[in-house]
Length: 112
Image 1: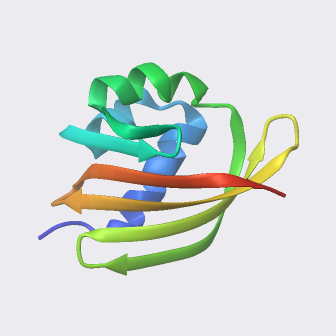
Image 2: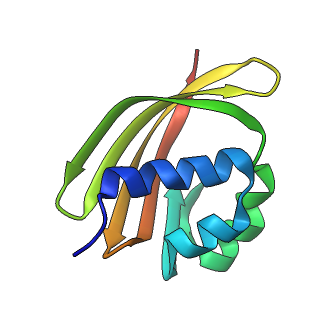
């Protein structure tokens, strides 16, 4: 039986916040895809690590506003604080297969 998907989602954000590459490697599946307004055609796992992962560790904190589990998906709205004190809000839809994240849909652009 899969682990609690909300806890798995939180672990993904913790890995990103702390630049824990080993943890994120365990949490995302080999067939992982990443989609955002800036990456409409999507990135595969390697593309995610090339384009997105270099920003890992640049956020001081995530405050979860909404965590909703629906089947294999977790809808996450968070407010993040950058290392320079700036803040923003994103909503993401994370899809899981078993204990691994297979897809991320990121909706961003809301500065606080």
